[in-house]
Length: 595
Image 1 (tube, rainbow, N blue to C red):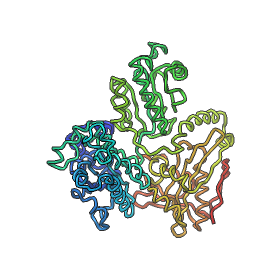
Image 2 (cartoon, helix red, strand yellow):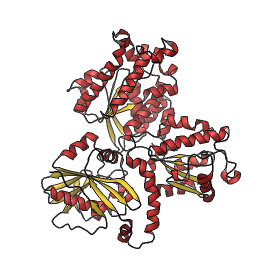
Image 3 (cartoon, rainbow, N blue to C red):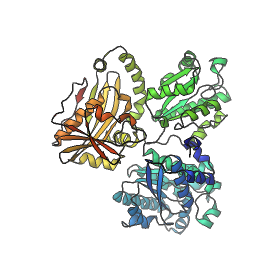
Image 4 (cartoon, rainbow, N blue to C red):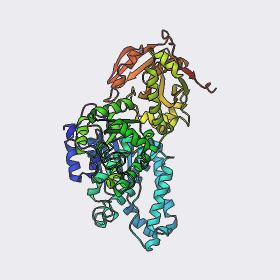
């Protein structure tokens, strides 16, 4: 099936159920395609859910193997250590729990006021049981707050109603999820968005134990796939926006800065509210960029001086405004930000431009913007383009990193030699362990980095903690700073001792710092750590993926010798007896090891 004919991820939410299943069946498995073993456990019928999730993942480039447990056997599967669930050894466990399954239990409960705590505790105990036997991604659906209103408008405030009980269960699960590494799928939002009167169809539940109509299943499982794939490195990191009739009403080049509509009119208010929504994305670490057919000076004037603009010049990591083709301009933005094309979403009011970019870059999300800007915010919510973890300090500082990069590039152009340039920057590297401060960023690098990632091994948080405590492992990360600012944690390395070898399990680096000799510094550090482990040889491993081609020759470039292959893994070796440290103009800070 031609990739150009595949729906993009944002389109999947609106596909009819039968169309989604049909398209999924047409996808054939490709050699080297990543796979996922998914266990689906539910107290509602899961047949439609399982089929739709499998089709969705296939259409998003993944090959699912789904174990679908028998109806309402969540507890039996989880509590029995020899169950099919654990024999299947899933990478993802989904607990699809339905509000309707609570109705009779709640009605029979003698202690309704304590029912929420009882259900929450029961579910959290199930999480603990899964966690004790598996490092799988654990996905929990929250509950749809029902339409029952025994007290009319007072219902939500009455503790012994199912409505307030379900709301408290949802809050309890949300509060506990982070501690147990559980990903919550917000089924309550989905039902509210689409309309609970249709979502909570009593006939479907009574006849077939279906928690929702098949017509809503594509939207629900699209959100589930977002939750899973963000743990596998997928996700939007940058929004590229057009300006005319996307960020404001009117054509800047024709109407002039004082005639564009933003803020003061009904139409202008809709654009201004959309800017507020984009600003909220920026505040959680999503980058913003402009690609517009306009005069750069005019755009700069509006972004810096228009009194009603919410987003300002400094809010954007890149602003490209000219009358060239947008495909070339987007490539320039991509080159500056050094992100994969699948990390971008492009928002433009013009159908021609959307079609051009969708054709030129099939991996880039290019949704169909409504002709009415008042729809923009709700459309973004329905497409769920911005699934993500909590922002790390590095996420929040990323815009400043890129703005400092502009200044670094200006400095670099003044120097002929790389070392002179680095010396001028005054670079300092802080070598850090996987402590509680560094671990969130290390986990983010491990889970989400695709390009400068030699092995693409997706260690879980629990894995990383175990590795950090293992005396036969050297695990470190590098925080880089220079006189223009702190780049944050930009690299992480895990070495495992195997006899007299130190094997590079993981080597990941941010592409933002390529070309600053951090690669050389990292090899120097790995050699030093390997010696401390008592090893005589450093063994590098490169596992090719569709996204890490930029590091294909890295080991060779760093002086490693080719040492054969193990399946798809290419091996390289460095004899530590003959390795000599280079002179690298980066100041190193490393805490003394704990005795």
